[in-house]
Structures are given as C-alpha cells and as structure tokens.
Image (cartoon, rainbow, N blue to C red; front, side, top):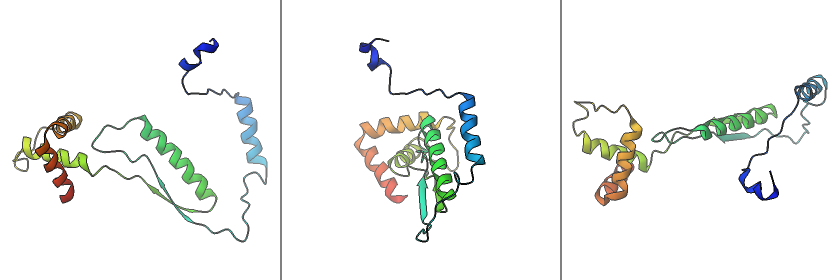
Length: 152
C-alpha cells in the first residue's frame, strides 16, 4: 500500500503473536510468586464498584457492540474482584422511555382489543419501525407516546 492509501486502511491495528511467545508469557505469570501478587498496603480499602454492561435497548435489535462491551465489562469486573473490590455487575435493560411509549401507542391503535385477541406480532422490529415512522410524522401519536412513558 502506498503512502496515499493510508486513509483506506481503517482504524484497526492487527498484531500477530506467536503461540510460543504467548506460552512463554503465560508460563512466566503462572510460575512467578510475585507476578500475580497484589501489593496491598495497610491503607487499602475495598470499594463497591458498579460496572454497567452492554445495556441493550430492548425495543431494538441487538448487535455485536453489545457483545463486545459485555466482554470488556466482565474483564474489568474480574480484575477489580481480583484486586479485592466488591463488584456489582449491571446490565440495565433499556430504554423504558420513548421507544416503549411508541410501542404501547401503536399496540393500542392497531389492536385495541389486544387483551381479548392477542395480536400476531412475530416480528417486533417491523412493529417498532411502523411505530417509529408514525412517531416522526404524527404529532398526536408523539404526544400519546410521551404520555405512555409517563404512565410507565
């Protein structure tokens, strides 16, 4: 690749480590008495630490970013626990806001008797997109959606 092609390379840096190198590093950690030791002094105080994971919006599709942030969050939790902290893992399921207000408004409009006759909602994404389209185009629908959020 020439110097002018750098902008096409993206934002990734690929690093390749040989199996032998990784094996040597892991063995060095496992066999050293001090490498995994925690240097705690008398002033160390364990703290409660809250780590928020992927927190997907359950009104929308999940994607690989949710998995990535969950893995990173779990790694952070394990390190903090190893250091002696009290870790609280949180995976907040949101958004209970506007999206749910829109879905409720759409459900009430499309299926007013949904308790007696459950609607055939096999694909919630299609249902959500329909509600979002109305939310963006209809002021009355937007108002009702916001009122539904307050009721939640």
